Length: 215
Image (cartoon, rainbow, N blue to C red; front, side, top):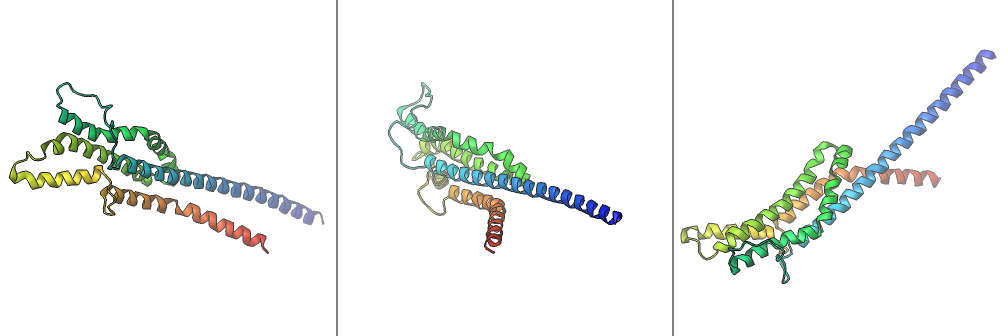
């Protein structure tokens, strides 16, 4: 009897230890899963804000006074100033939304640590897209717009193609084939693919618990 009691006691201790370890493990998984979901939601929400900020930057409609904060050269002509101000408007608009871009960049390393280092292009490609807008604005204001109408006949079509190309990046006119919109859709799809398992696991857990409670 003594041996049986000892065995029963040992099994009870093992059972209690297993329950504690299982409980800690379950709590740990739940805690990590919750953090992943929160980070996924936060990053997705901030990316959508970034998309709206980019749309704001690329709005083809401007108001009087935009671009006037640009530092001027004393040698600029009135026409040059007007073109340079037009291009600089995108910089002023970016500054109004800069905190959104900063917040998104801040999420980068936590996101990579949680979802893998191969998710880095989600962030780098987003900022490459933003930089391409600045680049096109600068080229239009300093090269393409000032030369309109003065290009040699044999270079005119090439020049015109460049104007259309960079204006298509600089301005958003609602075209579904818009280059910037296309790039952002690709990034968004990648972000949704990476974070989708978080929300799927949460849904499965909810269904399991509600099923158990409904019995």
